[in-house]
Length: 113
Image (cartoon, rainbow, N blue to C red; front, side, top):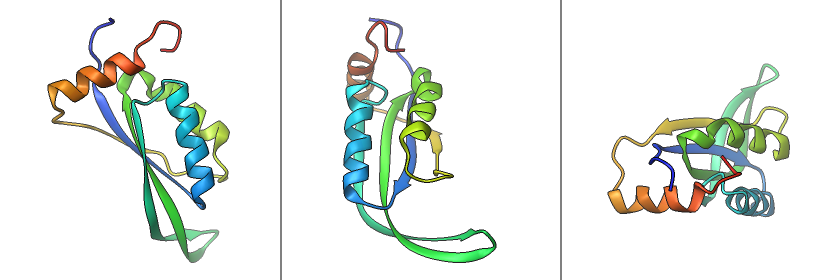
């Protein structure tokens, strides 16, 4: 197995559950994230084209290795239904050894990263 990698937690949103499920499944199948969680609907308030908008969205939380972030960002952007998708990633400062080992095992296969 390659050297252990740092874990990042990334966020994006979509407007419907089927979009979230499809994106999540494609990401996990591609081994770009160890796990993807789909949250219940949230309310987002934001400015778009100089107007304040309020929309119900589905939040997607991705648990990915640092080495995969460039490919993952491109993957999400290419498949995302929004013109300007949210893409925010934060390094996980404390991760259990077992979880990090598992994430590295399921994501670090030759040819993917």
